[in-house]
Length: 431
Image (cartoon, rainbow, N blue to C red; front, side, top):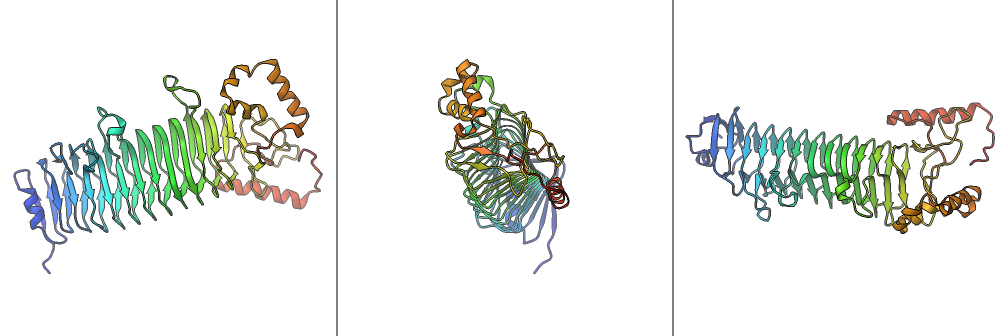
């Protein structure tokens, strides 16, 4: 087998011919200039660019189509590929069961999909910047990075903006989506029909939804941040057996010009999702802190902080739901209880909603009566006679201060159990 070689090319060279004639392991280095065309790579090579090297697809098709594994694409500026979403027009396109791809440090700008990687496995997409065309409607743009039927991918450190969805994952398993930044688009990260994936330490801002996670199971969603979303910080739709922890949501508010009845910004919207754990998250300044609906059951909710949300919880249920776990509840910025033994656990149960709230959710027209004497009297009666209050969410161990880390949650629990083991226990009638 011949040793791999390195070739330096200029725009005057026939790039496709060099790609066709290259051997396994060869490196093609593109010098400064514009390389016009739709290029196909059939061998395991490295295609790299020096500063100023631009691949221009001429407004049609794919800029680069990968038809082999063990290909590296790096340090290129890729522009002007096609806009036909039906044909999956992409800056970088792979659809042949490729393995061991490495796509890193590229800048892509175009109308269709930035990258479309289908049936690939064991590959990395690292530190790329992908932008779309703001002149197109959001629905007519492609996604920044589209992963379909892939396994064992690591998508790390990329930035996507002005596309439809930043990173779209469908029918894929055992992937890590980590430390990416998505902004000024529809959904930052969008999941469909996938399982055993990790979504870690990503950042989204200026979106309709920071993260839209749908019809998937066994996801680990940890350390992510979303700010300034219009509809949802996180949307969990048909998500099961997943862990949602240590995420940060800030400013989820529907714009006044888009306001219609029932459209409110939701920090966390959980729809028909069960058997999940929601812990250690901060939801700050959303119109509704957390909204659970449509049979979202068997969910552990504890160690979270709900701050400055006009409606902390919206959850219409016909049974009692306990939102604490092993003596650890949540922090509520509007909690008015007290802590007589200074263990950081409130002595009064917190119930975020009452029967009036539930009537308003079912009959939104009631909002105009919220300050009426009749409603005030009804709320007073519920407080005086708790037996009249309908079942719903309660937190029996509300936190007096906001926990910041998972380590601090453990410290709170340890202090609580130490207190119980070393001091006399007095009955608390509030419980």
